[in-house]
Amino acid sequence: RKEVEQDPGPFNVPEGATVAFNCTYSNSASQSFFWYRQDCRKEPKLLMSVYSSGNEDGRFTAQLNRASQYISLLIRDSKLSDSATYLCVVNDNAGNMLTFGGGTRLMVKP
Amino acid sequence: DAGITQSPRYKITETGRQVTLMCHQTWSHSYMFWYRQDLGHGLRLIYYSAAADITDKGEVPDGYVVSRSKTENFPLTLESATRSQTSVYFCASNLPGQGDEQFFGPGTRLTVL
Image (cartoon, rainbow over all chains, first blue to last red):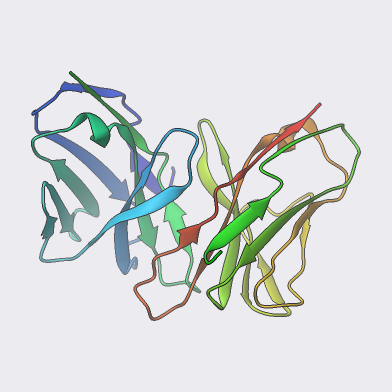
């Protein structure tokens, strides 16, 4: 079983749609959680950190459920520029290491 | 330029050859990392370094060698390249205690024929 699992997609949505991605992690001792964005043939970049209380950054909302070991990312009012792969990332607090999910690909259509 | 850079950006080599991928960062980050990214596997950690002269294995270290004589450089060497090492290689760095975010270089696309 992978340590961080995501639905690979692709999710094909029209502009303006709301889309949600989910992620599960296996290490209950994990301490930090992130969503990274990766554009085609580019490097991953931090989109947002995920906090226990949930957090929002503009059209993006991240939620963490420690009991279920589940992380989510909600994107409202999708833009064409949101098309990318979204990586769920977990820091299990073992020496500053990050574990990456396989990514969920989003394609926003006009 | 400030940031994290990788060279070469693209490399084609043959089985059995030695290849070195370079990574350079200007932030004086203590930690540096090497990942490979393959379809179906996502990003996997090859090696990491907590400081100059301190390196340790990640998830998939076999066939790779690293060194870190200076804080800003973290070269990755494939001692005898194999076709299974065809991949995109990303270098990253971070400074623990400043949000845990890792900053990635632009990647090196390596093809082993």
